[in-house]
Image 1 (tube, rainbow, N blue to C red):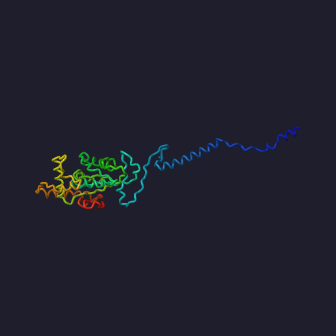
Image 2 (cartoon, rainbow, N blue to C red; image 1 turned 90 degrees about the horizontal axis):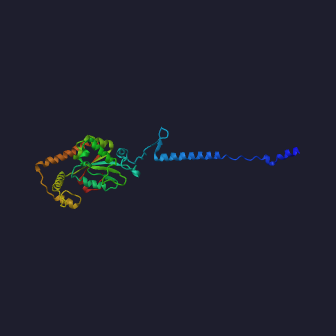
Image 3 (tube, one colour; image 1 turned 45 degrees about the horizontal axis):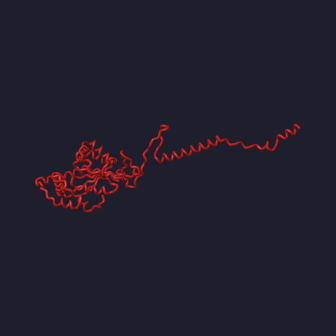
Length: 292
């Protein structure tokens, strides 16, 4: 009987061992490890896209400026292409849109206002007028440089500022507004910052003198609703100026014309080491499509 009981205990099921259940803790650990690996990969990709990299100090992240691609231009042009970062706003999608700096160097009544209007008709060009007509801005070297920095950093807001991606920014600078008083500092700034100088003069100096006298006449009589002699914003106004016959001091005429010639020659001598070009009002008036 004892033997029968012993045999009965060893049944078929006794020799079929059940597979042990997998530990749920192990599965959870595997899932956590996979999630961590995926998170690290995704984070590394995102950090590369936004330009954030970790520095030597653990747990500290540093924002690195995104490098803009080199534009497809000649190597000698690269110093004249810039990527300004305004303090007052973000350029956003225009951040990598290259900007060129320029300054129109001219004299009063030489067509600089009309020429500037032509430039500002372009969607991506901003020329900000006679910013140094305000004396405090040209008081000394420091104020001149500070003003130039604001203009070329796109922090100078005026009616010429564009909402589109700016491709060229500058202003017009009369030679009697600080340029000839601080030539060394201005030339050095233009050379180091890659500013292109555009000289705009008149060939007919006598006609320029008549225009200057007409402007002085308007300023003296202070016309409100009368006919201005010096305004040339339309063909009709140009005809009015052409008919204007002022009194000219013939004793000083030759001296005054020579003085203008000397100022022009001296300015060109000062800026001969910069990137510059010389334009004449009469040439542009005849052919507005001339390449500059």
